[in-house]
Image (cartoon, rainbow, N blue to C red; front, side, top):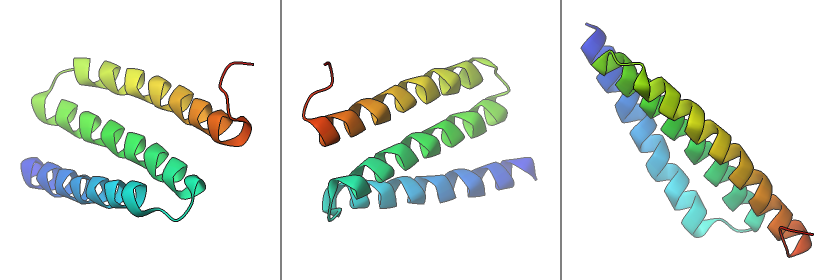
Length: 89
């Protein structure tokens, strides 16, 4: 039963990733693209956690933590680039 729930959740997050990719490609302004990129990182974290539950391994949870940290830094850097034109002052 847990396999069915994991498959359903993973397929929902997969569809959400495709919709995020569409928003990045067609977004009307840069704020929508930044928000879609951040949401895409969150969906990837959720997929890694689901895969870790399915495999029964803790290494995927650590990978999800690393992606969360890199995703936060990349979102902040992209926002600073959009607002100021440069990342490093």
